[in-house]
Length: 204
Image 1: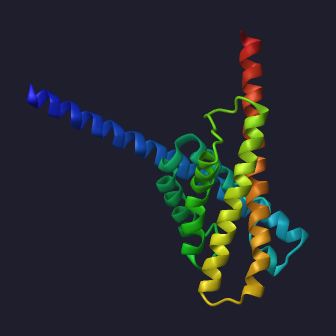
Image 2 (image 1 turned 180 degrees about the vertical axis):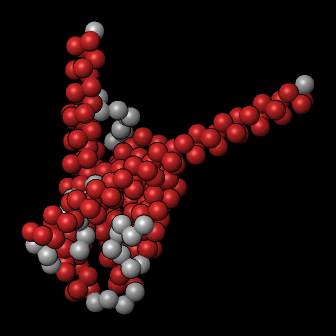
Image 3 (image 1 turned 90 degrees about the vertical axis):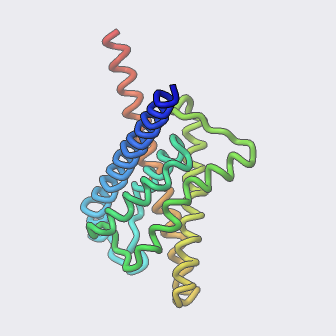
């Protein structure tokens, strides 16, 4: 009897580990995929239109949308997969930062913290795009998360010795890039979901 109970606990632990591994693979691949689109698509177009030192970050940073979706669906469990995805992206040279910690630390926590802020204020989000109102709420969360991320990056840059006057303008670029990127990704997901539902209804 005790052996059977122990085997059940081991099986449950293995199932949990496999579930977390699958989550890590899915989120990290989505994050890296979004970084590839930014690095070899959006950023190249952006630089060809207007190449400026201040605009080193992408003005449409799609990975922020992945952060939002991951934190929205699995909460704190999104932190480790996002960390893995960020490190893979950096190791592949998909991010222009010379200091990985600058991107890693604020980026992987900002979405979870933003949802926590809304949760503490009494605003709850249920998994799924059940309404336009909830979708708009996610865009607002994306902005708050972008602000947290931008402030975190600016703080790290200032602590590393850069002048505040040089760093603060970057905050605006980070916030805009993250917010627009999340908006584009969320809008795209919503449109795909609507098309899928229309296809299912047509088949039925």
